[in-house]
Image 1 (tube, one colour):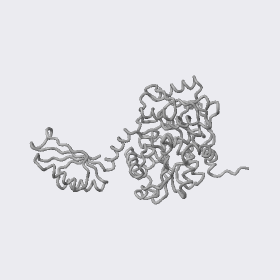
Image 2: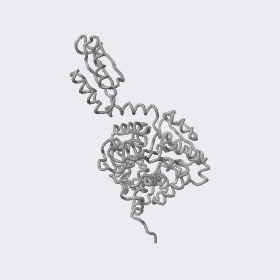
Image 3: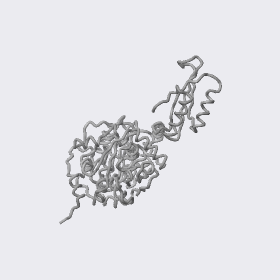
Image 4: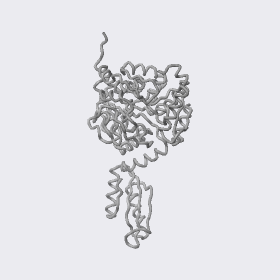
Length: 438
């Protein structure tokens, strides 16, 4: 007689086999019980193909009043945790299918991982991307070894074309979903976190519609230590997981964003299996604002020298937003699972994050058009030790006294306290100053 632990019973209850006749992927579905043994087997099979990324103590710990450990999955070769599930999925294919090849249709982290690992395994791989895909993503995918084909003006066009090519040529059409194989591969990160950081109190994961990482890692962590709190974080603008858990099944007509900033954070809920597993094993799901994600990206860049995207930063954003006060003085691991942030978008994010963090400020004031007045203003700014980023004078369209100019300054400060000190100093000298709120 086999003795089954309480956690294995939870896994069995969470993942009863589900019939999915209208599966969105042409790959075979493996909707069976995800067991801890499956995750262990995945870890053994992929150990030579993916990085065992560090889970390091963070300098941010003092700022947020807890011991923070960052699991740096953005250090994987393609910059994403998706490599774990993809590699296990590809190595589980039959040899005949590996010989024929696979095809995907997106520019997501999943597709990048498929492109790289299929090439490494000598599996023919084709990636269909819409014509609106950024040239940098197309170039990167080709460098990973995939045959990239630009087709259609939307993701839907690319998917239809990929399915047609798969049917005509015998390729296996792959799309991110929640088969037990894929979830087991993703769950190997939970094994590593438990091994690397002893006596953990909580682990924070990105959630959203693509909650496979959350579900798979929760299965591993809860088996090893049922007392670890597993927490998911998703965007307040797209609370797909919270809504799906509330009604008990993946929601239809989900509101998603096509903006590259959100990436997988706003993706649709892709499976009943991962949703049921999340409902059984995840302790809490919280939402954060876009502003919290931007500040989190800024914190990781400054304190950890880590350039991450929204999916990578959303876990820390829950602490930035103050959504988890119960974790004060606890040992907490945060998964930083994706670092695929393109340069133009990175610039935009930093430019938006600095004003949100009260580090870049803008003000306007009226001065009489007399020699020395602007010099006096600059003397105050120098005395307050701020950096002037931009200064403009307006003469022609000032609606006030005839010989008055409007001066607008954009300045950089150290932090919120420094900003408040500067504002008070300026108001004391210029009572009519107009401070632009963010």
